[in-house]
Length: 322
Image (cartoon, rainbow, N blue to C red; front, side, top):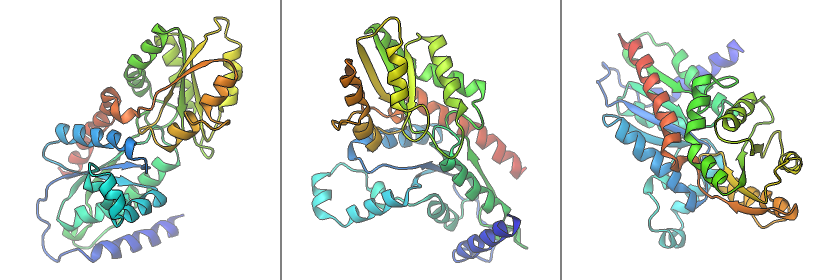
């Protein structure tokens, strides 16, 4: 493991050396990189636009950049950048999405212009494999040592926790997330509808945090709240079975993504017209379905979870400079 990390550090060091200068590092503008899986859905970009706007407002002295960790999604945007028809049909798309890079390439751009204090904020929901990859990259960069401190690629850098924190769900994060979802829960409750949230889930890592969040939501609002996942457990079939046992027998269900964007999963797996979509399965079971195609990136209270993590991270990283 140590040898692998050392080889990775050498490779990273060589890459950054291409832009390194043999003189004292200037006091560059601090920077923030927001790390998300990404989306190809044009209608879902407003979630990222809102997050960028709110982070820029909260950190006015910082350069704020967005990174997509998905290779497939970035490749699609690069192709779209050369597609004149697509750009003509979508004139309002922010130019930044056509040039978006991964976390590593965005950090390289920041380092090249001389920034030293850099905050990498995960826009993930839990600390699944996507968050772990971002964290491991940042840790590898921090591990690089140079004879001259001024040549260290990014001497002061850190990574902010995902929305629900690290581990099985710290109480503070669960409480904040519960409050952020309050408007949605209360609206569904007022309609006499059950609320079903679609999380992504992760088959490689356990996510007890979802269980804690669900327990907190039910205690804060009402019992007819459910949380299913696309890639893990519980599946929608489990949720439908649990809903069928409900004594109050709600006739209506509100479906909403527990995801930053209402992208492919929300529009197809959740609200799609195919027979295996969540909406179709619920309709087949006799429920009236109200699908909400609104990502959490448009929920300002949820975005504040990331901003609060950034503020805590800023304090930690600045302390390293003293």
